[in-house]
Length: 556
Image (cartoon, rainbow, N blue to C red; front, top):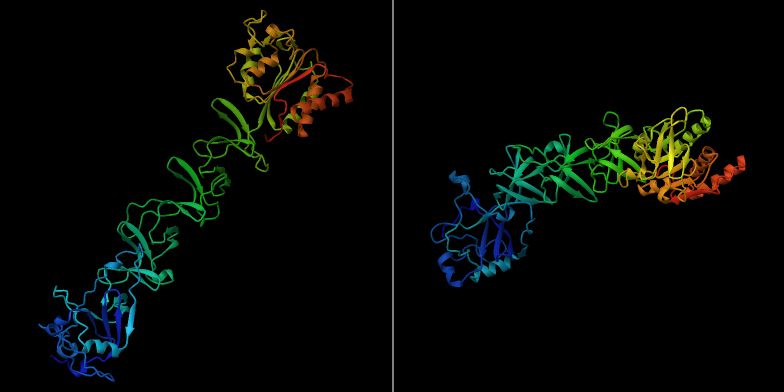
């Protein structure tokens, strides 16, 4: 047996038994060499080992110097020969990537030196007889080592290279030279961020969770992979820009903030002024103070910004189909002009106004002061864009009726028709219920000629004329009120016979609507109000028909 010089002899310190691979690990006093041995057949003992020669310390067993049949197990002391320490290769295939997390290192059961030496003396312990002529594995210390200002990590004397390693609850990556990586790192198509010294915290540790880098927020999942596209974190949805390229750092992974387009839809991420917030907004208004003009948007249930017409809290809004901005003021949509509240101090800002239509007889024929009060009351209810017409043809009247929500038609009427006058109260022509009326001429127009449901947006039509609801004397028993409802008008008011103070009734009716009454309730109360003030009883022949339980208040 070749005996090492005393100068290099290490005194056996402890022995551990690896239960996983049934191997013994020998730890020496200087923390130097450790020999790995395994159980084998007793007949291999004489071929592979010579008898124990030297007693160690207080133990009765012999010294621990073993050789193989062809060469000594341990090299000569490098300090005397000038030779480099032998390279040791330890497989770390279990640590190639940080996900899924590897199983912990196998537990080692420490046994007493006495028990180990007894097993050795009894021939129970042998070198691993794999038959592949591999070197006897030698082990040294495990831990961090700084080399040339950079960090490396040893496992049983061997540097970790080209692999992930889980150390003290953190993941680290070591390159082909064994140096710990920091900063951005791409592995198998995924981007990771390993903490740098400038970041603070544990240098080299793999980042998990949120991280702000170069003004951008990133999110790394539980395996450390930088996230892109849609990600749900907690109860919120986020979007991170795609990353398809980049060498030293990713081109994407940035958390979206503000109004951004994803696919065919627009979304709003984080509220304005909260630059570090990127949670997708849902079911909420957004006032973008970061844009010129501070536009309003509305994020719907799926987060997409509203486009086109929307009913929100019983109010009508219109959002530009290109920009998604809430529209205000006068807007022409599909050839029809609408008006949206442009008073930013109002709770109804941006909501569509109900529109009013007033077809009046020549100026001076009726009380203009009352008509002014009627317009004011209509505005109070939200009918903020009144259109008044003193002298229009029946064709013009018929053409404009579908554009409004409230129709208040003044004039002279008869069963099945309403007269349209010029300034001299000479009739331009007549608006008929049906065109088959024997009196119908080319100067006239008929409600029945409108397309089906063309008046569906009209909530109420008040026929402020005589005989507007007279079906008994009308041609084919179809009154003007009947014909209006057949084209979609939800509710009508008209008198069967004559009416003397339609303007006065209308004013009281609108005031009653302001109190939150239904159409029917407001009509009954208005009749009482008018009678109390003027003594005129206009209710005995008034017909209120259709959806009379509507409450016409703004917002609707």
